[in-house]
Image (cartoon, rainbow, N blue to C red; front, top):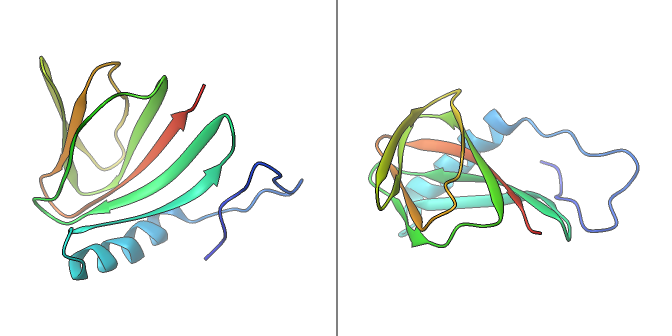
Length: 119
């Protein structure tokens, strides 16, 4: 698979099949005690894009929101939760991450693409 970008990205960006990567990471997540696996595809001073695989029942515990972020569901079903709202999401959905503490729970085995603005 391809390497993620550094802040000195080449003029020809890497092309990544995120669906295939999601499947590979899910295989890893199913074998890991945390029931999660992730790979950062793009990392620069201003943004980060990471594919995250979660086995059914796995959770990203409540955490602070970045300045701006989106979550695209590549496969499976997840629930994005904040103190006052819950978003049931499934494959091919995309949502803006709320500007509040939130968590993510895998309803089924799932893979997501998290894109974060860092400033």
